[in-house]
Length: 269
Image (cartoon, rainbow, N blue to C red; front, side):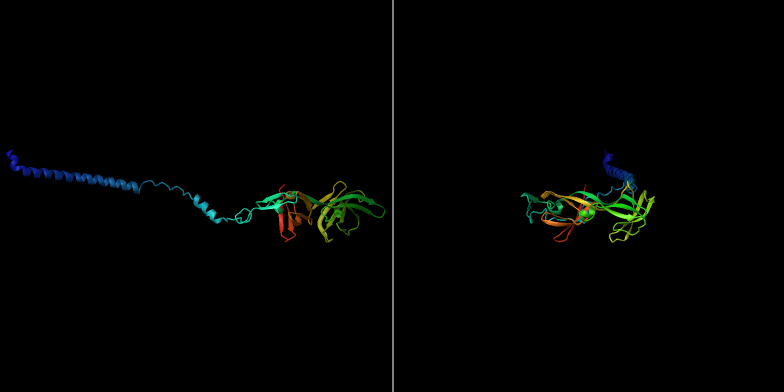
């Protein structure tokens, strides 16, 4: 005890020095470990495997851009009822038709039910012979002619050596014997009477034909009307009169006689 009383300060100082030395030594291990941990984290950040970013979802932006680029049309005449009240139209039989879309009456309600081709038909009808000449009777049927009389089959006579054209054709050659021909070759003329490039070969059992135009059947349900028309015909429905300007295999073109506006009706068989 006497020893401790005399030397306790030295002993205390020695313990503090030992503790200080131990702290310094442990600090070295702590610094080393901390440095290794920092290097490990740095390596994970700098040299880690980077995943590719997913593709951007631009569906909303693409839709918005397409909507911005497309035009938007407001129908302020037919579908809008704030500024234009509902229109009703009375038919000749006393019924009322509600005009909501605009195609319930007029040209929008006209329907093509059929389109029929009209032909130019040539047939070898008869061969007449005598000592002086050979004559061939050719039947000519012009279904597209403007009048009913000209649409009926008519006979045209052509002689073997007569190269002068009539209003439809001229003779080119006769195949076989003149009295019993296998076929007669004709060259058609155009509407002005000049020779055309079309050559028609006709025989007794095989006529020749070519499409010259079309006829059409129209139906107008609001007034329960049907029309059979050709180019040049006039029809009246829906309170207006129309001229049939032209007919093709797919459409009928009508011209409003009040303003000369042309409208095409498409054929949907």
